Structure formats: structure tokens, C-alpha cells
Image (cartoon, rainbow, N blue to C red; front, side):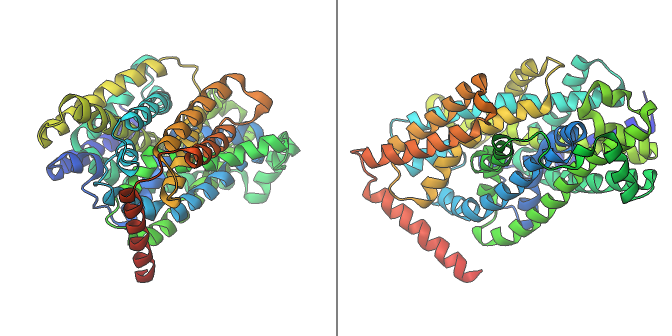
Length: 497
């Protein structure tokens, strides 16, 4: 039980909990708990966006897919890099300014409600419901990933590993809220990037260099080197379309909202893109070179043969000294915990701010809201554990479903609400519903092999425009005034930068 790997792993968990305890001291009110008081600097904002985005998918799902099929699976990485850049350039600064201008909105449903002056509260309720629905699935993916990791490190049954993995993340989210999540994200993003750089280099060193490793991959299957192998036009478009999902991911968008100011976004964008390129390249290389390594050492690949998403985990424990292997495995846990913690916190924020505070206790004080937020983190975790209880769940399939749901439901309305003054409340409501329903229905039918985010995003975008143009209730004078105020602030920031 107490091996160098497990000791290193456990030490990492202790450090994360200590960070949560420190963040507890800085959490004075509900704004601090769910947005860190809007105090994040460029570095923390950039790395927090990256860490909250990639999750266990980066070190398990993507390397596993490349391990099985070759370099053709890297189209996802290209789509994600393009989507990330577009999100920083189009959404980051306007969302930061607009959410503060619109009554200091703390959550996406809160922003939609104030942006469109929705007195009926329908926009708040529907958007909050969509967040809870897809985050239940998304959180389950993180729990599956953490369970597989605890299963490997501590040699425990899947169900036990699932509970321990969840408790590890729950501890520092419960204690420190957004600040704890953001600070740990910075540590975790650094660990993830370093681990993904080190592992492929170690494989190449073991196999005799880059050329020898490529030759080994070619010996397995020459098509592993072909970007278009097994891909159709629809397949490539579907993989690239993952980039569309960024515009609607609540756990990423909330990082923009929490930045100290909009002026730091260009610097944060540069840091984030450098981190992302290194991390995605490393993840693809880990799966690609991992195939070569286990082909050359078939006696070491039993665990990978059972589940291809273990490729990075097994490389970490096989290639390195157990103490270093423990650090690399901790990087996988870092990836899982960083995203899972953000998801739990967003769900907690929605339940507390958009349901409890609005419908149950409008006059609740700050201390009460913080504790309700902590309790709802536990409640959401329990629901996600139930979904994750099936050990046959694959991380990538769970992530793709939730990612598509958020991208289609919220992506178009986020873009149009920030850039188009003619967008109306009814257009926003119709767009969110159409986007979410399209993903739910298309996922079941899986027509033509087209990723559900594409029809969902397109139909949602068109619905918002058509309904807004036909809507007799045009944007009010105050809505237009707020829109123009935000545009002026953004113009001033551009001049300063």
C-alpha cells in the first residue's frame, strides 16, 4: 500500500487540501466563494482557464485515442487550439466587462437574466437547468478518470476508488471555493504540461531517438502516420468542431468573469495559448509514442490492452523512478481535479445564486450563502457518483456529450449577446432550448456520424437571430444603453492596451 508512488500521490493530495485551508481565510463572502472577488491576475487566469478546460481527457482520453488510431485523432487537438484562441479573442474581455456592468452578475444564468432584463425568470431557470443537466454528465467523466487512477495507484476496487477520488477533490472545493480552485489550477496546469513534455521524451530515449520511434510506429501500422487515415470529411469536421464548444463552457467562461480586469486579457491569452500548444502536443505524442513503446515491450502493456486510456498512466509508472512516476501520476489527478472542482463549483453557484437566493431565501446573508454553496457541492458530487458508478464508462465519450451540450446551448447566445444589440430575451430563450434539445436528440440518433455540437450550434445560432428579428418585444432603451456602455468601455481598454 505504502509505495513511493502512493506516498508521492498522497502528499500531493495533502498539499491541495492545505491550499484549500489557506483560501478559506480569504473567503469572506459569496462573491469570494464563487468568483474569488474578481481578483485573478493574468497568469492565474490563463492557467486556470487551461486547467479547468482540459481535465483527465488531456492525459487519458486524447492519448488513448491516438494510441489506438494514430495521428489522425489529433484533429481534435487542432480544433481545440483554434477554439481556445477564438474564445479569448471574441468572448474574454467583453464578457468580463458585461457581467460586471450587468448588475455584477456572478453566474451565466445571472448574466442572461440581467442582460435581457428577464423579469419572468424563465431564462435564469432554463439556463440553470441546462448547466445542471450537462454538468452531471461532465462531472461523472472526471470521477471516472480519478477512480481509474486511484484504482491503479492504491490497487483498490473501482467503487472504493470512485469515492476516494471524489473526496480528494471535494475537500479543497468545500473549504476554499473559487480561490482554492484557481490557485490549485495554476499548480495543476504546470504539472500537467511538464508531465506531457517529459513522458514522450522518455519514450524516445528508451527506443533510441525520434527516428527509431517513428520507425517503430510505422512497423505497427503505416497508417498511424496518416492524418486522414480512417477519416471522412464529416469525421474531420466533427473533430475540428470541438473548438466550437469553448464559447459555451460555463467553467471556462467563469474564469473570464473572475479576472481582475479586461485589460489583462491579451497577456493572459498569450500565456494560455503557449500552455495549450505544449500540452496538446505532449498529449498526442504520449499516445503516439506510447504505441511504439508497448509494441517494443509487449510484456509491459497488459493494463493498456485492457483499457487504452491508461497509456499515459502505465508509461509514467514504467519509464520512471517510482518517486518521479508518482509525481507524473499526480499530474493526471491534477488534470482531473482541476476540471472537476470547477464543475462542482459552477453547479454549486447555480443552485445557490439562481435557485436558493432567487426563489427560496432572497434575503439570505453572505455567510448563509457560502454555507449553502458548500452543501450543494456535496449534493452535486453524490449525483455524479451515481452516474459514474458504471466502470465501463469511457472518459472521452462522457466529455464529448457534455461538451457538445454546453457548446450548442450557450455558445451562440454568449457570442450574440456580447456582439449584437438586437438580440432579444425570447431569442435567447429559444436558442438555449433548441441548442440543448438538438444535442440530446442528435446524440441518440448519431446521424451520419456528425458530432452533435454542429447541428446544435448552427440551429441555436439561427434560432436566436430569427426569433429576435421577429420578436415584437425589441430590446428596451436601458438594455441598449447598457450595451453601448460596454462597447465604450471595451474601446477605452483597447486604447490603453
